Length: 204
Image 1 (spheres, rainbow, N blue to C red):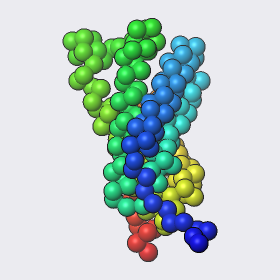
Image 2: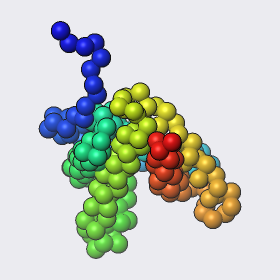
Image 3: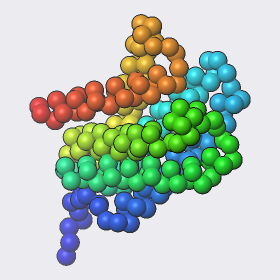
Image 4: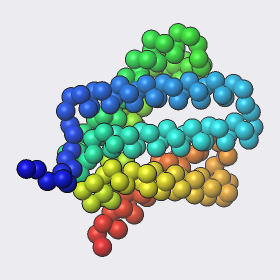
């Protein structure tokens, strides 16, 4: 006879990591396509709002979807979630190279800067995606009390609120322009703040 309540354990099997990475890469490709198509149709405030919203959604997906699949409860689980995030960006790179670039979905200014090659900045995206998943898993492990599933949505909400707050401070103080890229900067600042807050709360 088994207990009705089973302990939550990290999932680090090949199917979870590779399959989750493929799904994450597909979601990223859809998000990038929507971002590019809408950016062609919008301008001004509407474009900034759209881009900022998609940045927040993308950050939530990359930070916390790996948590949903891996369910990290310790340092090993956090590392596996980061690997899943990395796999997501690798799968997206394949889709980007085979599909999105050939159809001319967007201009590749960064390729021109790199002499026609994207491999001076693509690895930075790989590292960034792994970092987002790592920070999301870290937050989840600090706040989950052994059950990461139940804290995903509150964590997403907190990250979004902190990101918007940082964006408002940067733009309101005129330290940065009102732009979708500044919302991405807001996310980058908000996540370490979220980790620090979760750590301090867990220490009580």
